[in-house]
Length: 308
Image (cartoon, rainbow, N blue to C red; front, side, top):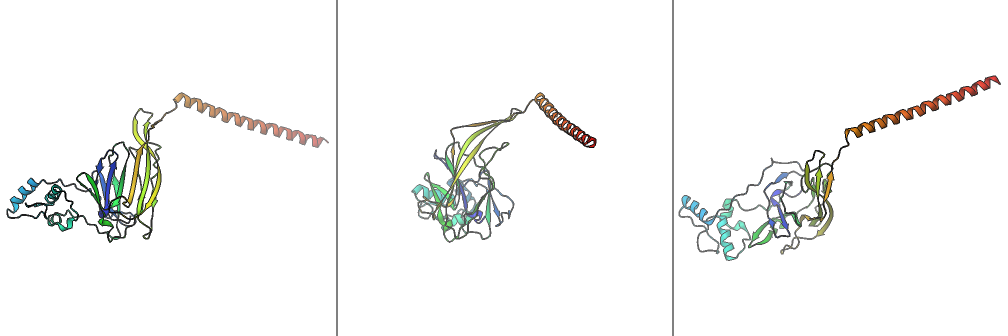
């Protein structure tokens, strides 16, 4: 609730080497105020297809045949778009550090604003598809990018910003919901003060595959999980060995749970109902007999007292 959406990056990594950086598909980032109420309507980030160098040059020639953008030392040719500059840098084995210094990226709006918006928070909502292997999903200030198969993180979000990693987990589940499902992290609230140190808020999740079979015969394949928490204090390091944020480390359990929903047959219901009614009559009969015989004894004693 204390970090604006423009600063947050969402990534997923797993042990097979699969990396999903800056996830936007089926995932929403909604601007909120400090109380968690949305400021604007929900909007999904638009993924703009990458323009090839040839397509970009063709479009540029249609608009201005004389324009020749600089490649900033990476190539002697023309780079007329932000993607072309990136491609030229990648071809030389160079890394683009700051997009603000590249004219084409500024014109295309490709520069990410790393300034903290005061009084704003961010609600992350949606789903992420991950393979059934160990991995992690993390939400952290700054944005990740891929360079020659290696993942890097832009730590400029930590420069000049006083960040507070307070967070609330409204709901976190792995798979579809089913009756009786319990998610330990639901409604988890971590409220921190501004003077508390940054660090990695780690949640280690053990996922147990679960099949819920309804009485109708329908089966729901889902998961349950248990969780332990740990906090590692520390500032962001240039090597990326420590990156403050909220991390969900998940691993699959080797066992599977099967829950079966059953209903008693109608005949069994009738038998139970008869047993209950019979029990009531029996108890009422005992009470009636006790009251009757007790009253009879009392009357006899009263009669004997009068006779004496």
